[in-house]
Length: 90
Length: 400
Image (cartoon, rainbow over all chains, first blue to last red; front, side, top):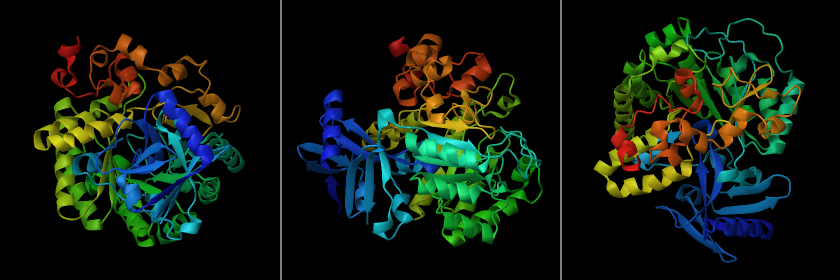
C-alpha cells in the first residue's frame, strides 16, 4: 500500500488545473503502452474501478491500482524547468 | 495504441519504472504530464542502413552507407532539446538502429537526461554480447519485428534465416533480463500466422506483443493492396482477443497491444457489452482517457537526415530539419498549416469526413489515422478508410 506525498508547489499547480477544468479530483495513471508508456495526470469526476483514493491539502487524487500495488511511496514534486515529476519508491 | 490485455482481460503489468530499479534510492524521477498537454514520444530513425531488405519498409533501407545522417554530436543536441522540451520517451529506430555504432552512447545519453530510451530493431544482430550492451545501457524496452512465422517472415524480410536470427536475438535479450516484445504488422499475407505467433510467445515466454495495423502513406502506395478488408480486420481482432484471454486464463499474463487503428477500442467495448457489461462500462471510461490518434501531438518523428515528421508514416511531409531549427521550435510552430491542423483537427475532420462527423466515438479515436485518409482520398481530413466499425456501431443514423 502506497503513501502519497505531494510537495507544496505541485499542490498549487494541481489546484489551479482543477479550477481551470472545473473538476474535483485528479487521476494519475500509466498512459500509452508498449514502447510508449508514460505517466499522466488528468482531471476526473470519479475514480475508475480499482483506483486507490488519496486526499492531500483538500485535493482528491485517484491513482491507478497497478501503481499503488507496486510501490510503498509515491512522491510528486514540481520542478521549475521540467514540470511535474513522479518518484515511485518500492 | 489499444491495450487488449488491459481492456479485455483487466490485466495491468507492473510498471517497468519499478522493474528496472530494485534499489529505490536509484530510481529516477519520471515526468508526470497533464494528459491534455503531453509532449511527444519521439521516434528517431537514427540511421537508414539496414542488413535486411523488407518489402514493406517505409524507409526503403538497404545495406549501404547513407549520407547526410545526423552525427553523434547532432544526435546529442537533439536529445538535449527533447529532454528540455519534456519528451518522455525516445524510440531509436532505423533502418536498423544497431547498425549505428554510437547507439549505446546515444541511448545512454538519453537515459542520463531522464528520458525513457527504447529501441525498435529487427533483432537479427542481437547476439549475447549485444544483449549485454543493451542491458548495460538500461534500455526500457527492445521491440523486435517479426512479421510472421519462419517462411512468411523470411519472405517479407528478404533474407533466409531472418526469423531464426530475430528469435535468437529475443532469447538473448530475455536471458539478460532485458524487456523484449514482438512487433507484428498485420497484412493479408501474414494474418494467418497470428495463432502460431501466440504459440511462439507462450513457448518462448515473450511477455509482450504489439500488433500493428497497416499504415499506407503517400498517394499511390502499393501497401494498400495488402490491407485487410473490414470484415477480416474484425475477425483478426476477435482472434487476438480470444488468444489473449486464453493465455491469461492459463496463467501467462502477456501484454497484448494493437497499434495504429483506434477503432479497436470501441470494438473491444462492443464485445465486452455482450460478455461482461459491468467491465464494458469501465472500459468505456478507460477509452475516454486514451485520447485516440496523436500524430503531430503526442508522437513525432525525426528522420535520419534530421527532417521532422508528424509520425514515422508522414515521411513525405517534413515540418523542418533539426540541423537548422530545434525540434521543440519546429513542433510548436503552428504557422505550418498541417501542424496546426493536426494539433486541432476536430473541426477540419468534421467538415470533411462524413462518418467521423456522425460518429459517437470521434472524441475517443480523434479521427484515427490522417495519413491513410490522404493516401486513399487525397484529403488529409477525410474519413480513415481503415475504420471498420459499422454505421450502426458509430451511431451514424442517430446523429445524422
